[in-house]
Length: 159
Image (cartoon, rainbow, N blue to C red; front, side, top):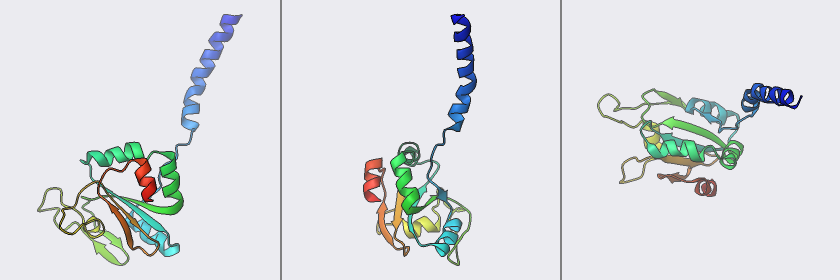
């Protein structure tokens, strides 16, 4: 009798395990595009957090994997900021605040940077570097820029 119970219990657990795994809601940062940001800012002003990345940036991928998955980082960004994630080498035209922004050099330069990260995340006298994060206030004025890997503690302090 006991072995029959164990057999059915194990079978039941095996059937329920996928349901339990998929039913757990994993919270994520609500990343939006610049076009969505433009619409959102027209409805409600709010601070903005922008993460510029590229497909080849190792530390950008590490931020995605390690930092942007931390519950306290997710909660802080989702509650207090519009969060924008943009590939700095994007080739598409982006319309924002009535202006079209482009990647002027994508046909002539390898790894050409789009106008938006050059405008928001550039430093005088330095080439554009990654990872690059920008924090803007409710008036869309740049408050802080970061050009390095930030662990969750450093990012939370910056936010």
